Image (tube, rainbow, N blue to C red):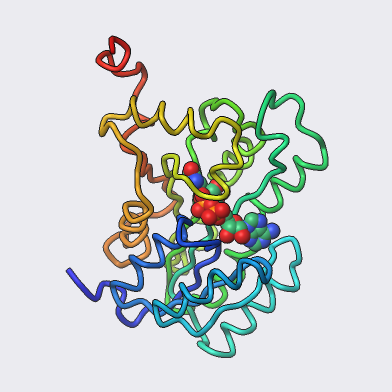
Amino acid sequence: MSGLMKGKRGLVMGVANDHSIAWGIAKALADQGAELAFTYQGEAFGRRVRPLADSVGADLLLPCDVEDIATVDAVFDTLKEKWGSIDFLVHAIAFSDKSELRGRYADTTRENFARTMMISCFSFTEIAKRAADLMTDGGSMITLTYGGSTKVMPNYNVMGVAKAALESSVRYLAMDFGSDNIRVNAISAGPVRTLAGSGVSDARVMFNYQKQHSPLGRTVTIDEVGGSALYLLSDLSNGVTGEIHFVDSGYNTVSMPRLDALKA
Ligand code: NAD
């Protein structure tokens, strides 16, 4: 199947480098004919994202730090001016102080709780609202979450709490925008080796554990997350909204680890 995204334009937020989940998604969208705009957080990331954007023919590459709402507004002002409307949005942004992605959740500080929630959860609501204003002919948006939202994962801590709120936001936003034919979903990805992923203490142990105990017996690639994002952002999923879609080799479905792995 080709040309699924032909004639569609959208914004991809959260590419830091070619290991980023957002980059896997961007490639899948571009391969199917989508026209993309990208944001980057600060010049150091900008230098890495520029050649990636060039490689998929994207001219719109805009700075954006979600802690500074003026930069978010500037992105949507530019999109309005250049394109008038958009069809899809990818939000793949999260941050928490690394020193609190270890040890006990109970030790989370007030300051880091608020900052983690702002960047990793509320930014989606602020951005979704602005994106919906530009989705004049309907649209689709996704954010990225992780299974640490509903089940305790070692060291994931405040990020798990932020992801739980993010997933709830997806359902509320899906209701808010449904009457405008705008769909809102999340992909809950299995562990992927990225900059953000490596911020969680003992990430490698979690990565290997999930690899060993998932039904597919492996972790997922950014291209596989990209394939599912393509489905959620294209017309193939026109009847789907408010969902948390797992792309995790089936790990979330498992109660007890594989016996063969335990016996090994
Ligand atoms: P990544 O480090 O490649 O991407 C994280 C992005 O967040 C970066 O581009 C960074 O610039 C951006 N960001 C952080 N703070 C920001 C701010 N204030 N303003 C604007 N952008 C900001 O890592 P990734 O793993 O691709 O993360 C993308 C999303 O996927 C995140 O929401 C993450 O929680 C989620 N996720 C990751 C995994 C994993 O194992 N890597 C699993 C499930 C979900």
